[in-house]
Image (cartoon, rainbow, N blue to C red; front, side):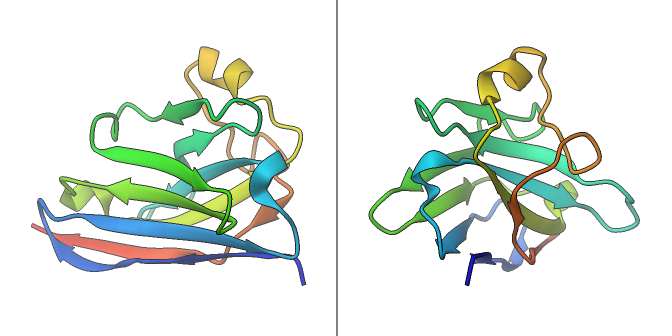
Length: 135
């Protein structure tokens, strides 16, 4: 069964850290660009947070998380991680990972954007992981 499963969410205080995992089953993440999106409470649209390319492991970070979040890929474990440090209350959201075999991350990143599901068809989505940061 092909699926992405997120884990690692939770409730933490402001300033704390969490590491989210996005584990693939049924396919190899090696040839996929992987992205993390989040949807904050009372927000209709998802926001692109970070992504890692399939070709050269190039990365993208939204301005709001630069210097605090780090995305990485573990090929052996078929998992992509999002290390989140110095968490703020505004990071509270449901975090989703998505995978796509065709996305050329460098093209989108050069325009400073990560396409959401309203702008681009991602091959696979996870079910989401809740992150709550209390101030």
